[in-house]
Image 1 (cartoon, rainbow, N blue to C red):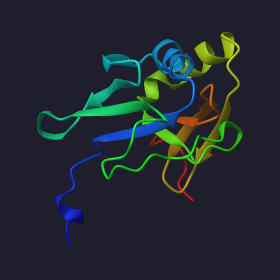
Image 2 (cartoon, rainbow, N blue to C red):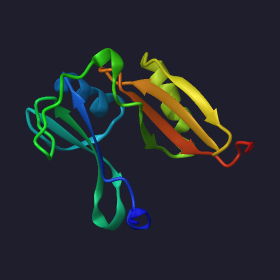
Image 3 (tube, helix red, strand yellow):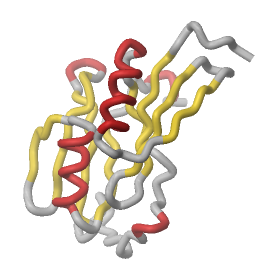
Length: 143
């Protein structure tokens, strides 16, 4: 098996209808750095990955074919096929991020996951993809 050889998440690509609007969300609200962009795609830096690889979030216009040459149907914005994307944050930044989002009128939901000792903030991008900002918190009582 190859599972024990995997060192991290390399990239996540989201197909979008309005790349300009969604790009602005990930750049201005989430605060990710743009690494590369063109009219049909944008690559954002998430964090340093394993062995010099950069973890990336990519936004692709729906017209870009897959590695196997498939062109997908137009995304249904009200029903994203992505359940959610989780970005890891530091526990010390949790309250600052939550307050900043709330102060700027961003609709958020929060959850505590006792079984794994995580605190999460959920928000939606302009095409209804859910973004989770999650941190480990050892002070959460494990159940």
